[in-house]
Amino acid sequence: MDDAILIEGLKQKDKKAFNALFTRLFPKVLYYAENLTKNKFEGEDIAMNSFAKVWEQSARFNSLSEVQAYVFTIARNASFNYLRKIKAQHNYETHLANQPKEMEESLSEKLRFEVEMLEKLRQEIEKLPEACREVFKLTYIKRMSRADVAQKLNISIGTVHVHCSNALNRLRQRFSESELMLLLILLELCKN
Image: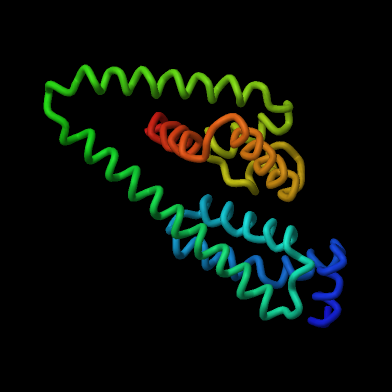
């Protein structure tokens, strides 16, 4: 598809134009995000979310180079945010490991709080629509790749992305961004 036609179609929210753009740029954005984060799953999430933002902002683009600059900037910023989150997790774990014995009671309170928060998260996950809940659990709790989830449930990878996005949006309504980040970190720590 010609670049000018692609951009005009994108402005009109034409799905064929978006799919052509996605097919052309997604592998590059995915590679970029995976290399920055050093995490296949996170790189895939970042790349997909970057394209969701392109779709949301599709009317603003006047050239393919603008779209490319935008999607790579979104992916870069999201990757850096992920790396900051990982660093914060590491600092938190290091901080806990260096606490003196007299802090054990305080740690017990923190642990009790974390358990309560995880239970609240579990309850909120159970409130999700069935298909959305199943995709969320397979993706974020069992850490299956989105492609594997799509194959297991016999649905398209696009449907998996939509369910993940919807689940995270619903959870963001219930929890603050920092609480949700902490809960997802705790889920990851509980697996280890």
